[in-house]
Length: 307
Ligand SMILES: C[S@@+](CC[C@H](N)C(=O)[O-])C[C@H]1O[C@@H](n2cnc3c(N)ncnc32)[C@H](O)[C@@H]1O
Image (tube, rainbow, N blue to C red; front, side):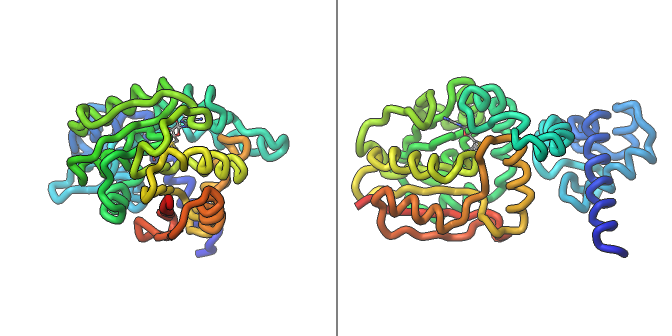
């Protein structure tokens, strides 16, 4: 089949099936407990054949999986929370004409409104990557998680390193979601919270042996990332590690990610690993190294050491 036609019809049917599954409550229902199409049709007031084809259309994309007993379950919890993102794309023609995003996720006031509802879902997106990052890094004693959100990276590190104490830095309304995620992980007594704007945070010098900034830098332009990293490095003790996890320019989903950042930030972008390398070295870090994580060419872990 003609490749553009095939791609477009697959994408359109996936979006329509996903949206239908959310609107009819199918995804929320299987989030609570796996269910078969007949039962879902009864409990959600739908037609059984319709439910069957909608769920089957969502399976190849990895949204849901069919269990051996015929029941469906979601592959990631909370998938329905992604639904409000869909109407954003309707604004792409207007944004393309004007150069303005639908909202400015790189503005702290806007981020404080937008992120509380989304960070739990975002944390689920990274799947096994936080555990992989925790394995690759030297076990920390004092970790600063910058733009923590639902703290996927620091929860994995704290879980892997029982003597690690974490400070989660994020905007005050988002930290409510952070606390919730930390409680769910049973790590209340290992976390402290630093509410505020990461660009103006007051952090005691040399107080951490690991500073991690995960899936945050893409919200900002290159000069802002360089400034942020330069201002955070003094909080690292000598010999400590600065770690960035982010989307990788040139990866298979980088163009789609850039398009989405165009819609929801003023200047965000997927930056190349060599730019991160330059920012870390420019901040005085040594032994700067980059490693692909997740195995799909989309994400990179970049580390540097404070002398
Ligand atoms: C894309 S999310 C990543 C969250 C988490 N690190 C993860 O990987 O799932 C970006 C995070 O940065 C936070 N953030 C954005 N701008 C910020 C700012 N100026 N100061 C503090 N936090 C900010 C948001 O609230 C959000 O939690």
